[in-house]
Image (cartoon, rainbow, N blue to C red):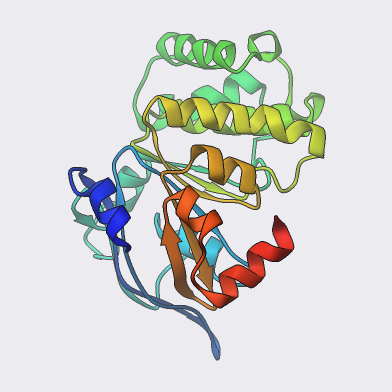
Length: 254
């Protein structure tokens, strides 16, 4: 990590710590010994070419991908320890995918209340009140009784975000949340993410949206060939890239 980032984060609490993370598929090393710290309240945006390992890294943070070796610590607990209650800790880690993963046979309200009622023992009344508050926040309170098939892609992704928020997470992980959307729907999803960032939500975001990275991130990280190639504040990262592969990548996407 650069000196700028050490200054940026030295007073902050580490919420996620990655140590010597390796992921191997067959003969292919997807993550090659990554060590990193993510701080409470920061927005870390991860970019890189297709197949670089960035989504595998993100999905490893809550063990959706099981590391070949290495350790992931969340709020001080080692997720890779076989004695860790992974399901309990995952409740505090919201995950938003490229595809929305809503339950098609359930109404929007039911999609938002099923986990809080089942996993956090909230009453139906309490869960529905919280769900309606979240729906109002994203401008979709009038769609509570609709089914996912009745919504646009942008609306579904906003629902997927508030479904994670309904669990009261300490960190939100976003895996290319806008890449499956039509271009005119991207903005409405990024707007919700910007609001979360302003409120201090810890966020780790894999994305191709360079404007979002410039505007919202505290730190931008470039992953290439399973390693961290470079990371810095957005201004330094985009204006003064050092890594030759990053320079080449940015010349094609900016």
